Length: 366
Image (cartoon, rainbow, N blue to C red; front, top):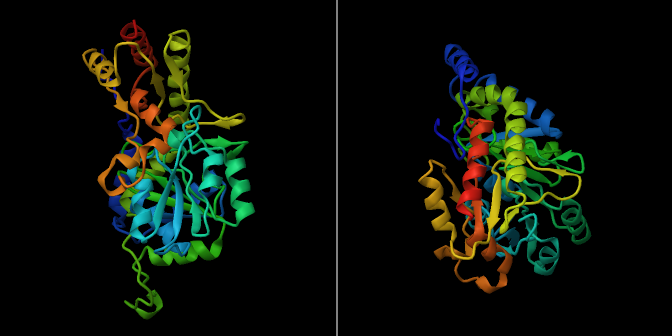
């Protein structure tokens, strides 16, 4: 059987054509037509007025926090199960991350825990659509409006996902996406901020270019950032964007295959969507309860069959900079980490390979 991939990017002739077009244009750096075209198409697809490209998803989150005026002494509520890039930017601006536990079914931040975590210092809520599965944005938005606390969506894994018919990336003051090599689409690196606030968008577009006032040459009235996307990256993004519907279709199909094949296997639970919610299924994932095998043992047995897997994100409170938080406060997150497993979800895989993975898991579970 051909190689099975966990989350490798899917690149082909179309990407080559776009990259060559960019090279031939000589606009390979940060000036040129590909970036504004990618931003415009992205904003139209998501359903916001503006999209601002950045160097990475991490840079997008940092810039969004900075733009909201988050400063030392402020607090930002964030789930304890997420990638570290959701949290480190909070410390970049000197603020304090306040971690909340997850809902055991969706694996997303629990809105009840969010409300309980609010203090007079809370200046933002940062929901993460984990593995592409939208959060309970109705409840989180209601809390945001009632307390007057803005939302910054970490939509880095959820391109193409929707909640109540509305795409992720449109619920907060701003939302952030990532185009790392393993995401739904890739630009090699890169990220995007979406917003309906034209004033915020204009200012962030200014800041990503070192806050340069081009009308005065190399004049910088504010402290800015070198957070610009390149035209090479944007050209790759435009090619990938054309293939997005097919990528989403494939990821959904893999998830369907896994669910159908494993539905009757005792000890396996899937990440669940909220009603009227559609995940991008960036990664199809399961929670395994086995009487004698832990996740590392199951991974070992699957690897012997040529099947790559990855454990669920480590709870942030396990990392040295954040160990001051008590793990006992996050029982659902720690249980998920102990039992959770990401399955092969790369769009390079075939349906037959997904079926082989599911069959292998059922055999390993015996």
